[in-house]
Image (cartoon, rainbow, N blue to C red):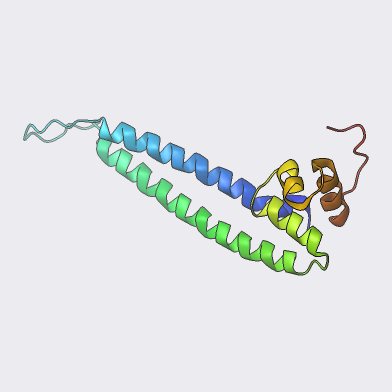
Length: 136
């Protein structure tokens, strides 16, 4: 499994955060709308702002729920992959990195290495070991 595949959970979580912020923005805008009840029918070309906001909110809520289902699928997929790793140390580091979204430094603190050692160990296991002397 590649780092890109392992990182899908992280990006799904980011997308859900963005969608939740957008949902709250629309909800706030909808709450700020007032309607005038005049007993008169709407003329053509007049839109129902609250109805439009409700529709946008319903669509966004469905997208959030779908992405949350995708997250659960990704967590199960990642756990299946992680359980195939024989080295318990690497298994823990990969779990902390790709499921718990910790930084290399945070993982190092947990397992007793520095961040660069954690990065090398994870990349080495994933077959992506590169010259890290010139990269920061």
